[in-house]
Length: 167
Image 1: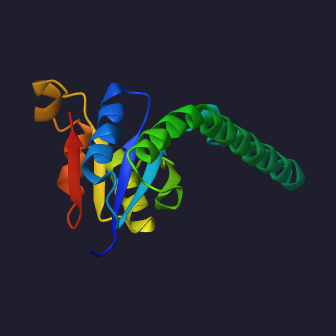
Image 2: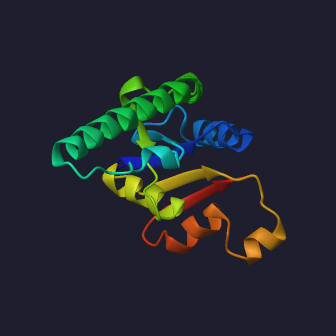
């Protein structure tokens, strides 16, 4: 059987827990699977996107450097906050029989102005995953009709991928 790679998006929700449990149930104990656990980080706060600027080029350079350092610190803190979620998901998969070497971890960084679904699909491409697994809390009908649901967006834009939605 050829290797099959799944990107499993996780966060703090019960839908994510169900998605990880479903993946563990389906592929646990089988060979030829690789799981990439991915946690979507929140967007950077507006205060960390850009600074007010300075007329002096040296001062501008210093402000840029300080802003990059603050962004790096914020990302490191967000990753640390996500570690218990990743650890729990990793444990579920390991208990189902997946080897440590068949599980990797990634983070999705939302780009300003880019849809969350596009971020997920880009991460799937980078990770060489042909299947994307997401949990869904079954949004309300008005939200689905307005096209404001990230899962629906992912399905619409996910041409070439297999998308599993676990509710």
